[in-house]
Image (cartoon, rainbow, N blue to C red; front, top):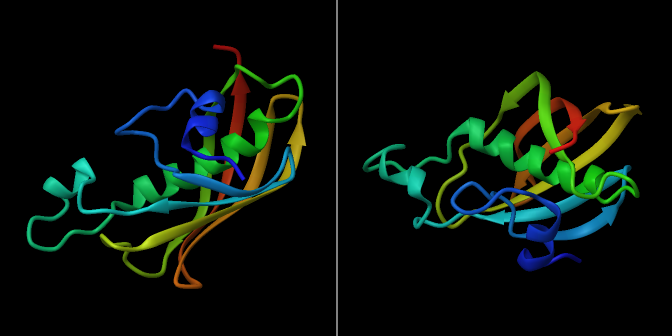
Length: 142
C-alpha cells in the first residue's frame, strides 16, 4: 500500500491536481488499484455545479490516468519520468460521483512497448461502475 507521501514521490502532480489518495494494490507495469476520497472541499465543486456537486468526468479520467501512471512509473527505469495522455477511447460514464463517495480506481495495463502503452481503466463507487475507458499513454523524460 502507498500513502499520499509515497504517491507524491512517484507522481509530479500536487494538490489541487493530485487526484489519488491511496494505492492499495500495485504490480508495477501490470496493474494498480487505489482510491480517491471525494469531499466537498474539492475546488472544482465551487463551479461544478452550485447546488448540485458532481465530480467532472474529465477529472475522473485524470484520476484513473494518475493511477495508471503510478503503475508504470514504478517499473525499474521509469523513475522520475512523466506520463502523458496519448488517447482516451470507449469512455462511458455510468453514474455520478459526488461528495462523500470513495472512487475506487483500477487500471490494468494491456499493452506496453517502448514508451507507449495502453490500459483498461475502471472507477467504482460502492462496487458499481461509475466510469470506464481505455487509456493510451506516453512515458517521457521530464
